[in-house]
Length: 345
Image 1 (cartoon, rainbow, N blue to C red):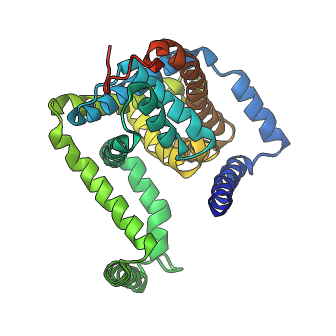
Image 2: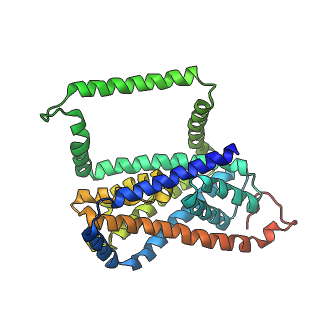
Image 3: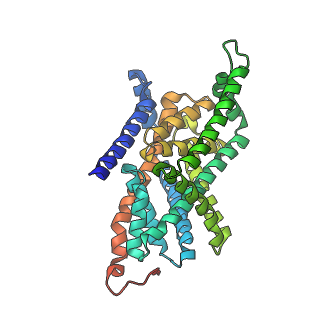
């Protein structure tokens, strides 16, 4: 009963979060702007969703191959198709139930490949650890290739926070901020050492330990360069799909790959903030392209929602197809005579 209550509370929270971000992304629209947005969407080149789907599909396939490679040190070699189907079903489930998709993904592969589901958890942690690093690298590359944009953001949003009413540097604010940061770090260290027996502290420690274990687990791989090729390939496909999406709206078609890097970085944050990125992705893309002197309303909004819709539709389409094909392709594997662990074709 208690678990059910917390599950309902959790999903209710995520649903409310999605509604909140959707509201944020459209709150500035009056009747005239709604009409402008509709016209912008009507003029969009929807056929470009086809190459976007192709690029996203390639990225998902590479992700499945990378996940499969992480299982090899444990002695398991699932088929490429089953790994891919499990990845896509996981994405699909995550749209409605955040984080549940990772559990379903492991459960499905465990069922069809006879791999203990608990052994797959470590591979998921390793994947997420490298995704966090890759996202940090994307932000780093954005800083290098889009220095003017980043400096403009800092000038407009960060510097004012440390200035007084006359526009001069407020050294007291800087000192207070630095002191607050030091106090926060000391407090966290004290809490970890003093209250290490409390469940929430133990869970945080487990998460940090899991991330570290995930990072060092790559040492056990036979073909380490291939792992990094898969990882780079995944993010290159995401970058290219974003860039191709620019051409769907005439007003954003002049943006280049470096600009796509900025949108990818901010859009990735949006995908994390709300379930399936609904609302948050479009909002951050809209605010980002405004830095390139593109009107947020309607063109920034149109681009944000179109790029999000392309990803959403790919998850739904490929996820449903995976649900249908998975049991059919593995018809023989569920028979009693096909119980070999790590079976591959």
